[in-house]
Amino acid sequence: MGDLQARIRAFVDERDWSQYHAPRNLLLALVGEVGELVEPFQWRDDEQVTELLADEEGRSAVEAELADVFYYLLRLSDVLDVDLGSALVAKLEQNEHKYPAERARGSSAKYTAYEQ
Ligand SMILES: [Mg+2]
Image (cartoon, rainbow, N blue to C red; front, side, top):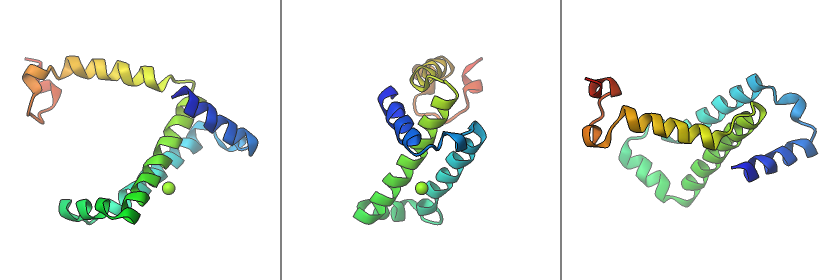
């Protein structure tokens, strides 16, 4: 994760783009890229999505948008000085407590259903 963020930082610095990378701008860019990721899935049923992903061009388009989302997520967390890997591990640990496997397996119920 740190290596990817360092590579992005170098990419940004070489272009003097840090001046544009205020957290608000990065967040808006992230949301914009999520919207671009949504597009290929929009108005398609599961079968059509499967067909899309089996198509080389369609799959490449989805991969590119996932990468754009990941880019801005990594860049935003770097600018905010958030250790994204540690934050993810902490969140997983929280969710392991909220959703004990023995109670949550095979269920889509919200964690509050397991608290009683
Ligand atoms: Mg994009």
